[in-house]
Length: 483
Image (cartoon, one colour):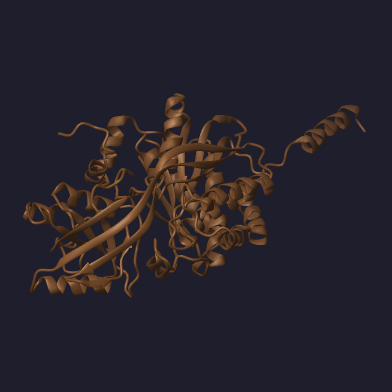
């Protein structure tokens, strides 16, 4: 045989033998899918945490135990770069409360950041939905009185009305001179809801409480016929507390200075164990981090898996993290923020920001549908407030989330004493781990990101386009001059 032919054949064989095998993205997704289905830990770790720790209120002993628990889990999954991000903040916790209506005791729960001590009595005034329009129509109606508002939008209201957060409704009541606020829950069966009534996380000057739907609507009917006097008595606590975000970092392979944050809040309110809000989100993040290590995934960009504390009391942990990046002049390094808050059983993608490459999401959804046809590939571009993405979004950072397909009944226990582990569906939280891992890998390993950071003016317009200006102004987070 010709010597040159033999030599050429050996060279070709050598090149083939030494060439790396390149896994396609769909093959990577299939490998992730197999591993997570076999080894998912989100359901088990959430179950263990709710059983051994309980609630995860920021600043409490339970909260500190939860911080340690997830730190140690990150380490056990093989992360070498795991850090606490400690911060100090004044935080609120509940004491005792009572409400009487014309002398009749009514079931009630205190809303967050109500005063340390408060004792007020006054005439109750029905302010409907508690929106700005309700007060503008009767600007003196609640002055030195107690405002009664519905937490959602009343059924007979204009269908085009945009609802406000309970804290924003409280801020409006204070603005118009109310000396107390009673918020009616929307969930049947006497369920009482807690949560902060302060848009800033600062202490309120007036008491704010929640009553059940049935009691609330009975009161509304009574007010049509006669005046009602409410008496609110309460004690609460407000102290400087120490809390810690927990951050696990996986360094990118070729673009290590570009950072993708996958975050969600670890903390919960204290009426139950917070299994849905936000156990299903935060413990899915923990499992997504595990899946990256177990599958040997190292995308181009650096990943930070962040479990925030203090979200419920005022986005304290995410505010602190964003402040740290700004102080270091490194905010431009954060290219995307992927938030999981009460997220589960993903069916699609929600992307917030100015999207330059819609094809990225179209292709990604098609690939995820190949993995499981139960994933329907839906897409939305909506942005809201009151979760940890907010602080990043205000900096112009593009936002990612999932479109969830959870049983609607679980939302009735939002911030309530029934938010416990028995509400958690194992397959749903596993699906969050499966698809969340794939989405995060696709984003962090993309040749070019589908959206880039918005400048200040573009961010401002984006907030206006998403009907967020009024809410940000009420909350003191509108950063631009008003017209």
